[in-house]
Image (cartoon, rainbow over all chains, first blue to last red; front, side, top):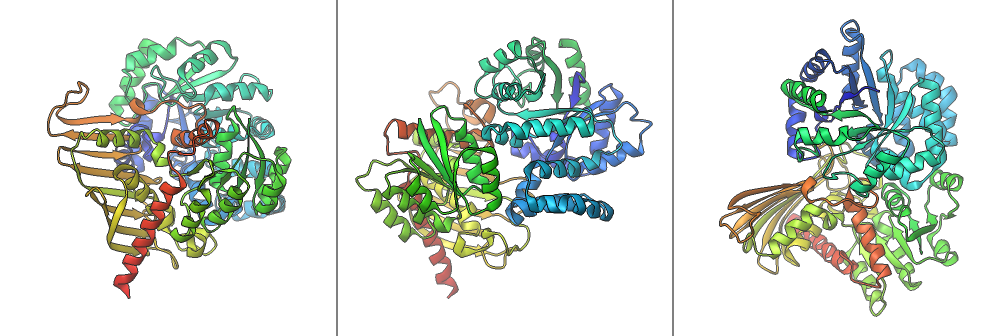
Length: 289
Length: 340
């Protein structure tokens, strides 16, 4: 895994600190070229790894990467599925099954729909969740076709919902499918890292890839910072750290030194919405970690 | 170990189940839902007793509490049956379809020490809790007026199939969004006495209101404007905002942050004259398991704690939530009176 990864929350109006700040960023990045400018800057200063949710607009960004494959020859993507708000709206409107049909169909060409109807038409009717999961993963992954993917992450609302349900089969089926079909590691984002790590190890998933907030003030770290530190020191898993500055509450140097102290934090995921911020953060990450 | 059941396994039922399923003192034993898809998969992954008829579930299952997360229309009927059987009840908001049926239900609770709670989770959000403390300590003086808003993109086109588009089922922006604003107003400023200037508007829906605008006057003299609109595409997710003007200052707050303006310095060293800004990272405490935000865990853990401690008075009782239903009735009447 890459040591430094640029996240995409800032491009789509997400801010853990303030909704207003999120809105201001959404406005700034309405123009796809503003996003591409930041990605170009990151790539040029040596950050070749990016996470992307499956927000509708990521399609355009992937098109850009494909059209400039020479320039982005060493690109590595870490998709995060699914873009949960999209599903929440669809479920409100069409119910669970209706939403699934909509996503599977709207992401496909006519030919794909025909072949999917052959395979999936009956699946949706049989309502087998593992088969539905496969169809949804394929539909969501379509936008990344032809690009180099390192890890496919399950977004935290879904991970934590499934963790709460405690359905081990769903986790192992997901990991098996991702690793067989896409030949990459399956990763999980969570607000409950220690519980999830224990659970995944209990499911027999070896050396799981888990992404969570990790910062010295314990922001978005449940149940508490001590359990996170214990998991990081004693459990066999690969950790990706995000929110290391706790939405601006921790100084960059302290934030980086804190995460650098844990050997199994393999990667640091950060967000930046200006070119200068990308370059500064990269420099700080290299200096202190 | 407390034994629980869930009636209505849609988005909220699933969420509540997932959060409490990780609680060390809770064991879920039964689920009731009308969807074959849901029941089939619960059968596959769990050893729960499964029902499509809640009366059968209540009759045939030994439980301490139930969670009711069905469409609003069936809330009171189910809660009555549960109370008759001596069960503690957590009910998804809003409380009842009409204040009258809610009143009957509360009468049934009389003398029974049953824990009853309604899922107005904003009462369990750390920012709004902090705002309540600031107001009750008198930091902004007497509250004169507030603006209390909720926006989101729940309904962006007319839908015939969803229960949200059916008034008789409990659809509409009033019960879904405005109810949160009204409950928050009740939580922060006390009982509402008078309702005026109500406007209910359709934006995309054919049969229910998509926006609610009204003025509330509280017993303590505070007044406020409510603005709720679930058809505003510009919001990524539901968003609550409140701005409170008082004689000594003001507060602007949403689920993630609050800003406090003080006209005068106080004896609290951490508060300055002028603007004070606090963000969630400084206010929020970790929870034992988080899904969709810690306020959802806080409210359910509080419910379980009240059962264990035999405390009938929860942070949002049926009686608390019924006051919101009365205000909703008044808003509807106020709007109808000017339109007839």
